[in-house]
Image (cartoon, rainbow, N blue to C red; front, side, top):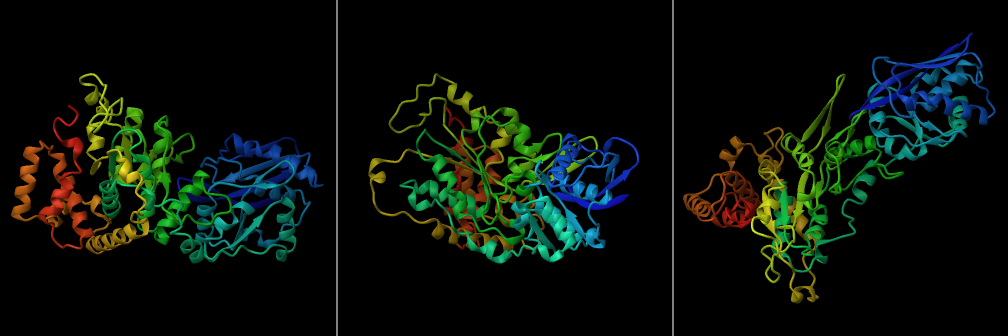
Length: 513
């Protein structure tokens, strides 16, 4: 007897519907066809144990399981549940109702029939709705995540027997109901950390505010213990809140990677990813035999923080250059090419030298001549070219550490950042692909960042006196435009340019001795 059930396979951040055809006939051997990987092939052993444990029998005849379309590679263990139902139906141990064709069924089976969580429940649910399925049956741990999709009945199950009973009596399970807006807006502004906990460092907080307002990449340079990591971790608290579409995009990526917190429905805060410096280039940008999103995609619509930047392998840092420009990464294989979104803010930190005390106001640098420049050269010029703000972080004085006056809170800073982003949204409304000042093209820069003769004279004098490189010119204009937006100014004034110029430390000739 032939029975068809329906599942789904995830490629990149999208899903493709898969038809699971199970045929039980005279003969011997169990076979799975349709380009399954090892995890899919092993499903028959898990399925057999789950079937026997729950007082059914595994047919001692020929079983052929076909995963169609057969020219697309299938991976993972989430086809266990639809295969088990197909075997039970094809061997006539359970009745197969007409409504079976209306449901996508996904889940990994334990040997006792317990249904384990899967990856990619959200894109699977989106594809099921798009193709007109009435409902989706997934593990209970994934039900709230899939339940974010409207106009689709999502059922969470914990055991194989629950699915069998559901097709015998559709009232045995109730669809999961998720209030999308409540999930989304409920905890957008709840953070465990705040900028008011940071003592002193007012100029660094200002730099973080400018970076958040314009979407600028930034690098913090300073001695150990100056507060670089502490400041970077608080950046998400002043970023504008995620839009609903951004939240869905971000949740899809985390769902595919299996990084979504258990029983969560939607990521409502901007992600903050901080990989260790031993990370590989594949782990950073994505890839693998079955391509998975990397850290730059997990940081989509959020912040990627690279602590101790020169300690990362050179090849790892270089692979970021193209994704930083294109805001996506393409993983190419012989039979497929997948796109992963990668629109992130890069925040990096580093010591100024190997000993960490170059330019320190009190401690003396012990590095030999040329060592400071050698240390800085671990980070390539093309990568630094994509970083708008170079911020020197100095140690906090004891008088500031012992000051009990409360600093400005993240919420107050965030209000100014949101105001500046609103100005930019209006400015770039008719410019597809540009959403903030950091994303301006050279053509847009010339049209938007117009400065007065006084400003031109100031910028010329600064570039000559400080020996700023040519690449600093565009960055200074972009940052000054953001500073003007924060001030509510239509024009870029000389004081805005002056503030932007001070954030190009690493472009100064002779900065590293």
